[in-house]
Image (cartoon, rainbow, N blue to C red; front, side, top):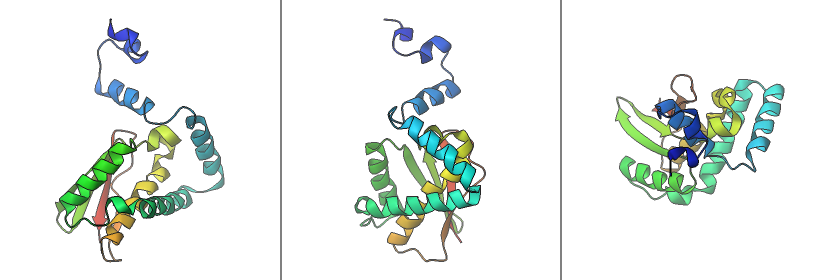
Length: 169
């Protein structure tokens, strides 16, 4: 059987590029029954609230998400254990994976393949990334981090596979 019999993606491009793989992967992340609802919700919210308000709302949703799932990380003792525990959790719900890197005075967070762009649209990345910010903020707080430390987005989200965040002062 030729690859073009598996998925229409292969008919578009006989040579598989990184962009084509990312597009294919994104198509697999969000349930078709929820995709139009999530997109409509994002569109409607964008007409009613500013980017900053939406990012704050999604940060609160991310915090709630972390509270509701903290059994997956609340007992870890090292950054490596946190990464391992969260990657197990993220893999089970098809939310990609995370890597942490200690840097001077901060922890660099790279979350790969989160379904934010697919669920809400590329135009919503500026605020939907707040969900990851809130999640990681709560995770670090649960583990005893100082309230003077915060999670921030690094650069502008681009719709690529990686989202960059930083936890520090």
